[in-house]
Length: 147
Image 1 (tube, rainbow, N blue to C red):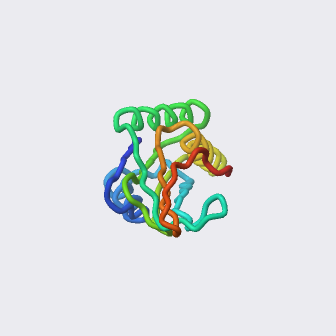
Image 2 (image 1 turned 90 degrees about the horizontal axis):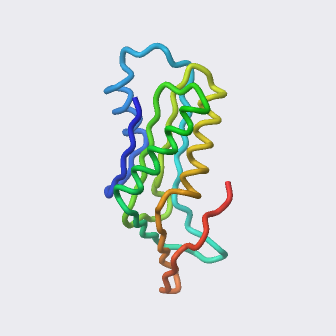
Image 3 (image 1 turned 180 degrees about the vertical axis):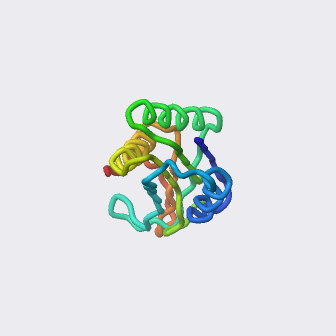
């Protein structure tokens, strides 16, 4: 089972995992590893203090790109299930932005695929970030941070 979700409301990563597991994995005993990554908003970027960020996206294009990343990962590693959930809209520091969860029979595939999806998501998926700074200015983020 693969699931991709874009949320305009708050992201509760642990609730998303619980719901996914209750709905799709209750009787599933084939996985031996679950790897998760949760990304949260920092309160700084490029030497400035950031008070909030607004994330924009193209809905159908964004979901398709995320689906493509999952498919690439599944061709490269033996994955059983994937869950990718991303927030859009206004986000405050310390709030979760993204959840990537991978289930596989073995941990190496789960770790590698989770990192691959997250790194590719940051560099190829059409999300645009506008930061609000403490000095009242706002700016579009031109590049993502590395790793």
